[in-house]
Image 1 (spheres, rainbow, N blue to C red):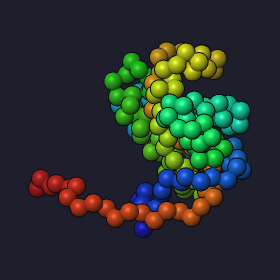
Image 2: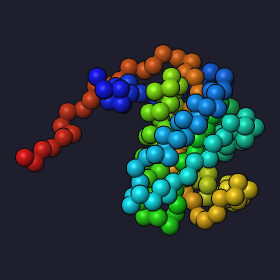
Image 3: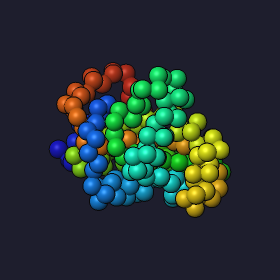
Length: 175
């Protein structure tokens, strides 16, 4: 079977990670895959914020947990040590779609490199706060950005979940 199609069928969201940080080279390959995602008019409007600093990661997790309404002892990133946050340009009409494709590419790339990943939401709400707007400014990011999602990445500390059966009645042909 084609390796890309195989990865698409086998990749699953991981909800338990080891604390070991993946090598920076692997994270760079995942990011590169995200940067090669298709984008509206080829604009390449999405950006990625890579978080490997544990203190910063834990701070983001704490706000994400608060937004989600969970007990503050819950880790919404399931222990993943690295986080790749996709953001879309608020002034570009396909930014959410473009950022979503970035997320998909990064999750497939992580799987192909033997790493686990999961898409975690609430980036939109995080990056609406002044604190996260300031974070972007401190990184030299200008403009208005909308959080698309967090690609939490690390080594899985569990078995790869089995794929659920595909639902019938989801394809309609016009021949």
